[in-house]
Each structure stands twice: as C-alpha cells, then as structure tokens.
Length: 378
Image (cartoon, rainbow, N blue to C red; front, side):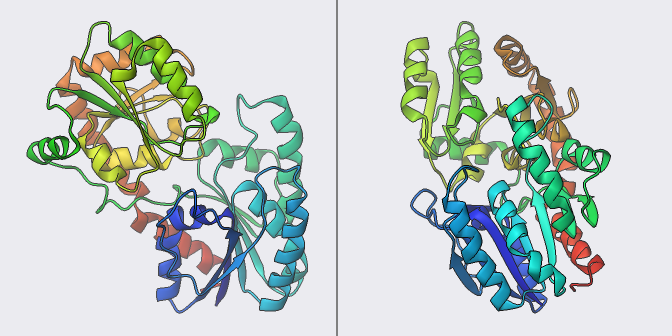
C-alpha cells in the first residue's frame, strides 16, 4: 500500500504522526509526506520513517494565494503517484488535499481526514461558522473517512449531516506512556535540583505556544491572585514565542516576573512536566490537547478551562478541575485547593494514570489500523 500524509507544516507530521507512520512501515507500506517545511521554528523532529517528502507552499490563512499554488503542486503529485490513500491533517492542508485528490478518488484512492479540531465549535465566532462550517460540510463528500478526536466535533459532523463515507471518533494521536510516565518522589526531587528549582516551590506547567488562543493572560491573572498568600507559586510556560514580548510585558505589569518563566520551544517536556506539581490549561479551544494527555500520563492533577477538548479529558472533581473560561479567580481558587490538599493531588494522580491508557500510542495505533482495515487498505 502507498500512503500520502498531508499537513500544512512539517512539525505536525513530526510531532503527532510518526508512531502510526512507523506502524504502516512495519506492515510493509510505502509512506510519502507533503507539507511546508517549518524546521526553523521546530527543529529536531525525526521524519526518517517517511520514504519521500514533498515541499508544498501551504499557508495557514484561507485567504492566501499560496494555497492555490499548493493545490496545483499537490494535485500533480497525487495524480502521478497512484496512492492507495491520501491521509490529510490540519484545516488548510485538508482543504487543499481533498480538492487535489478528487480525480484520484474516482480511480480508487481513499481519502481520510483527521480533524484535529474544527474551527467552528460552541463559542466560536460567527465568522468562523460562516467561513469554515460550509467548507468542511461541502468537502465531507470527498472524504471516505472523517476522523474526529473529540465528542463535540463528532456530534457536529454526525448531526449536521456531513456526507463522509464514515465518521469515527478516535482518542487523538496517542501519547507515549513509556516516555511520559510517573516519577517517584526522589526522581522529582532530582529533576528539580537538575533544573534549578526549589523543593518547596509549587510548580505549575502549561506547555503551549504563546498565542492568543492559548490564553496565557488568564493564568497570569490567576498567579497574581495566588501569590498573595502563596509566595512559592511558579508557572512554567514552555512553547513557541510568538507573543513573547506582549506576554512578558503583561507579567511585568502584574509584578509576577519572579513567579512566571518563559522557556521557549523545548524537547524535554516529559522532564519539565514530571518536576511540576500540577498541569494547567487556560486555552480558548482545543481539539484534544496533547499537553493534557501527557499530564495524565505523568500523573499530574489538572486545572483547565471548560472548553472543547479539555472537557473530553478532565472530569471535574475526578482527575482534575474544570473552570469557566476567563474566570481567573475560579482558576486561582481551584489551584489553591490543590496546594492545600496533597491527598487530593494524589487521588487525581491515580485516576489520571488509569484514564490515560485509552489515549496511549498503542491504543490509538490499534484504532487507526482498524480504520485502514475497514477501508480495505490493509
């Protein structure tokens, strides 16, 4: 079998899909990939399992003329290579790929689209619904299998009459629970010493790019509340630094610079999360957030906003707390509740270590393999 993976950027393939690509290779498949190279932003990602790579001038913006050029280049690649399946990801990558594969589908090529979070969702702007919803619904008829990764997207696709051949929910892209795993008390202490943190610091971590959608300011306001009574609070913010200047200024204005650290793009999240006491998310929306699945695998208690994706993973009072979006005082209260109750942190830890098994790489690869088999691809 010959497979083409398509995504807007290289890092998406490298970060999320290499385990399944390696499984396809193990099963004897030839795997190609098409994307825009963004190695300068996210270096070091290994794509050695991919047999052939095509550079495509995708743009994330639906208004960019680059996507017209991307369509013509990708169509030529699809028409000339005789793929058994085109598996597309990311909004613009999937739009262009499904249009480019229309002729190939008539000749037997299957098109799979994994939606990592529709841009139309509960609470999204009217513009998002007017722009993205009709496009996704129209292109669903050129989709042999639509894979969603959260319940809201699945319900929208089914109940709004998307015409994909199959609509299936899968638990994200999977997390390596051998790499992201719980550590002992002594191991955590050693990690804190290694990274220069005090043993009595209460450390929160939010691994997320510094973008507006990740909503860091909500967390900064929460930290500002917490530090009034807990001087040992610390928030770690690893991630690409798109809004670093703006967010750094906000931290200075609040006077919490000693409590917040911007760490930049990191490849050691498993260690940083393991040395933390809890994991947090203030995001405005998610597909199915890998950072929270990683937190579950490590056993961190979680405090996260009540938005799509987050609520799929965090059951309020069971393995963490869900708080209203932008209610930083509720966020602060829930964090303080955990700070004052180590037993609750321990209870959430045990529940997360149990719940994460359904989101492991092994579990997701099994689901994906079954989808390919159902489409007579394996």
